[in-house]
Amino acid sequence: MKVLWPALFKLHKFTRLETLRFSFHSSYSECRRLGGAQPSLHFLVQKAVLASIASGPYPTTTLKSLSLTNVIGIEDDVYESPTFQSVISLLQSLSISTIAPEYETGCDFQLRHWYNDFWQSTIPTRFLDPPQSSLRSLSLGSDVLIGPIDDFDINDHFFPQLASLKLERFLFHWCPVTTFILKHNATLQKLELRNCEMYVHYPMGQAAHWSDVYKKLQIEMTKLEELVVVTSTWRGEESKGQIYSRMGDESEFYQVELEKEEEEDAVALAELYAVVDLRRLTGSGQN
Image (cartoon, rainbow, N blue to C red):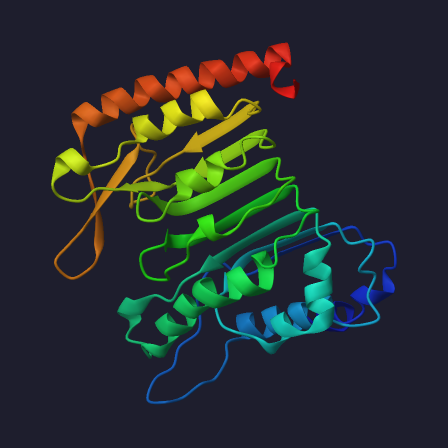
């Protein structure tokens, strides 16, 4: 750490810097008990990194790729700074994932509001809006479901040159995530869905299925040449099928098994993989 701190504030001296990747600690350590608000060392490191990114003068014309992993979802003035916004606006590749508070530890409930606001306000207005015409690769994720508690609607955004998209722990059918993917059908060549879930509500006849999503992707995503779909249960075990979730009585989500739907999903996903693989081998997606 003694070596790291001084270096963090000298990033602007790397005048030909093109790529920045920072992976923060994966455990959420913030805790506010009895009104106390002592930031953790992990958060202080994050603030130092953000400050270094926004330090000037900065080689905004050279930085093309920014990756921030395990971000603690708390507002920071640095996101609003002109230098930071200048960096974001010229990126070709942006990757950001967050970690959420562990509510069962008994910490101040305010932490949950801060996390919600981060996805509801900071991500859309400081990272995704206004839409960057230069952005070709986008990766968004969290360690909890995105959509239900933060009112983040990815379909509010559009990137005209987007070729690669990775989404992790997004709740499909809660927000029009599928619609966001489909409206990039003219440019999207790579799609990665990790641990995403499908919202199921009553009556079941109105429920959306993963097979519906895969069929739409097969028909409309004519440029897609690379596909990755990975799912796991809440225990972290690899799932045999696609994940469905319902909302419980206390507004908590729990995973459910739909055997008939999962069989149809597996068939539709296999067909989608086959089409994408064939397109990659023949190069037909470039036409």
